Length: 258
Image (cartoon, rainbow, N blue to C red):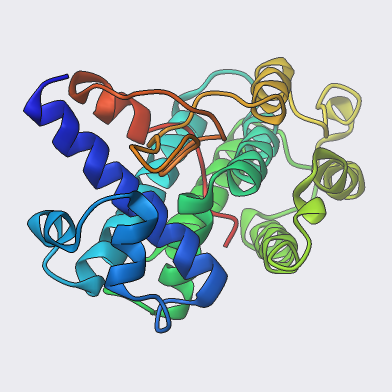
């Protein structure tokens, strides 16, 4: 392993350790010494990568934001029905939130203002939802009288509520919860001819990725010396990342349920 690879692994291990502490104790109570200990490195190694705790928090937030950006781009650029892509993207996010502590911690930091806000993740989620609904309207996928604005408000309220409830009970993010949500919403918002075509449980690709995540897929920002599992925008997993693959891993599909 090269010196550059070791530096990448150390940085990712620190991000993961920080995310675990932020989630368990909150940003304010998490200390730099605890973060470095959790990553299995010295305090000097931590300060080599991060000037202070705010910089660590910002790195955690950026990892979650990169996952969000990747999923939003995929949702906007995919083929097929826009409403199905919206359904699929919510299932992708739920899978990420269940399996990736860095995504959970990054989204929570962003919402609570515990660290420097890299970007407004709730605004980006809102724009993605409204963008897909506007596309659905252009394609004639919405029922008569249904508008992207009013429908977007309902979708945002429902997905945000599920994410907040899941902070205490991650079972809220299981696929059946979102499937139930879309079973209720789709008959009300989708054009009559699409109701039997759209899958509230997610399309084939979404189901395949969910199954991979539930069985322990590959992480987006994988842990370093401190252990296995994700430290960024992907489902739970393990492995030893190499620097050339870092960008691809970080941009694993995800979207903030906020």
